[in-house]
Length: 375
Image (cartoon, rainbow, N blue to C red; front, side, top):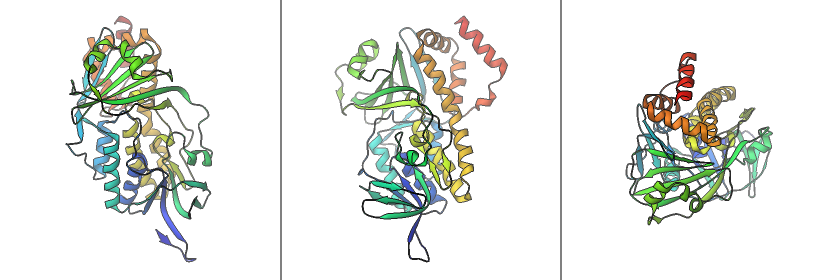
């Protein structure tokens, strides 16, 4: 914090929201030499419905900030498997693995790292008002140079700034829990059925995360599992170790994520459907770009970087929602990936950003279309 000539305390960076996006944004700001204070109405550890997988690019972003995931708490998953009633297709990451880690453990790890880096936390602090100069809480008024909204998909900072999206596309509902069972695979799995998917995340400690995604707000795991008999058999008799959490998920694209001295990050800055597994990784990449932009005194840099970082996840969301919305498309796609695993591997390379989206040419698109129709 900085004391002005008038004696007022000025925080260089105030971040509203102490989820992983907000904490990593604070750590990235400290790495750029900026003082950072994080405000949240809750108290740690903070849990939230989450697939809990971090894609390789997200792991790399954390490592660039000096954050390593402890092996005793993290499970290295090597790729993705798609499964439906008749077909199964697997693709492995071309480079480093992804990692899965329980949300509460990840949160505590990030809090500890941020505290060691000199981040100031204001737990149990509810923001009551925001203006161009300061953030007001029930106890005090905090002036800022930069204000960061990391307060989730229902962001109050975004509403104050007038940056709410014009519309939300394809809102869906997710419910997740954990089961005490030895992971049967070293990959994350997406099991597909008509109108819903179940996402399986292998976890450390002989546990798996199980999440159901659909457009039905009433569809819970217990009701969804009978559509997946092979999966239900694997989970039969397993102890459910956490209560079932629920939340919404959607493709939400904002026209702008920054203006003047304010920026949005994480779910506050837009969302992609949870089936892509991009959520945490996106926010970690955004945090690095945002810290660089604040150091440059140029939030236009962040706006440009945010758009670039979001391009692949948005494209993948649209493709996977097509699969979710049409049994015919979904069955043909998974059958094609099973018959041509190299194609699935190339798609996963784009998903994990080891291959640029721009590398896909017209000829390859045409070839994919022909194979898809022939599958």
